[in-house]
Image 1 (cartoon, rainbow over the protein chains, first blue to last red):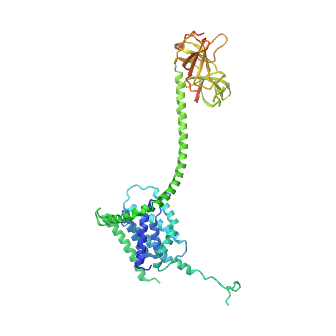
Image 2 (cartoon, rainbow over the protein chains, first blue to last red):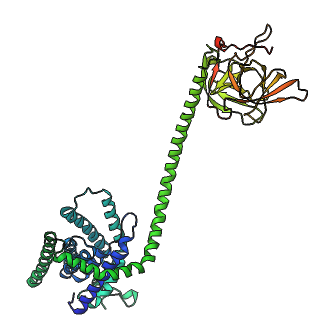
Image 3 (cartoon, chains in turn green, purple):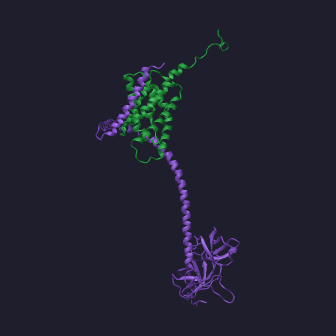
Length: 192
Length: 298
């Protein structure tokens, strides 16, 4: 990702909007016993298109914002989202994937990592009460709902970040397509 | 192939952010409620609160839409669950109510036989009602005991409260009871303790009102007195019913047009519309001595 003021502004604005939207609306929508969590999807999308350094910075910022605005233990969300953002970014850097449906898998796995890791951190830090098994249902539902939303969120994020992207996976994929063959059918494959 | 600088920068970035997170976490836990991070948190919340409020209001219709969809799905699930629960509760309630009613009727049957006027040694056989006639013109019941249980035709049948009828058709495992409200029924009875006799006849269609007929006008019958079976015996005939089975209570006394006989209205003790358990008196029994009635009615 090309680091510029515009890129910072774009990512910062996106994160603020996402966190506010999450806290004001999406967290209050109870769907099938769980809720959508777009913060992790946006962090995963930015990390996917921006790389590991951008990913961990975005994760840290989003986590800090989330902790600040929700009044929960500061640093917990940052720690987990930093790790998830870094992991997604590294995946993109190492594998250099370009399949169109990959955001779906990335979003789903990132959400699963986020809910599990955050639960582990929360349990280690300050949860003293008994934990209901329904937490598992909530986690699973969140992962499934996020899987449904992953593609549009990734697409939207890519469009927003496109001017600052050093490498656009979609463009790479387009470039990799073999050129369409031309000429009379009977002469194809022949060196003439 | 690997740019060492890039790798170092990448690792450094990760380390910085992780260390920063852990440092914040540690500091947050270590400080008091008025510490830097707590104050920062409160400040951030206050600063963003108007935005959150605005966003929350703006997005309320969207939330309501989703909530409506979710509530509808939940309501459908709840509806199905509640329907199932209602069915279970209805079944349980019906079972307990039936048991309660049966218990009440059995208790009343047992206490009936403790009455001082009730005949002794009647060898009652308890049976359950399995069917009843569907019209008011034929007041009959079918019970789940028959000849194999020692039941015979014309044996008297009692229920909670008193006499309800007699057996008419007995098969191996079932028997039909003709109720005292059936149009063909007639029971010789007397008013207790006055001893005035008559025949209890039904008023078809009104199981709450029986008529004690052929009561002489000269014999005084008062309201609220007890009517029991008279169990008359003569050299040629004998009543099917042993003496002393309670039938009902006098509610009203009318004189007929010629004022020769009185028409005595009797409300039966047994609730003839709701009988579940009955007892068939398989032996005639013996009237108790202390319940002897001076029969001056002839």
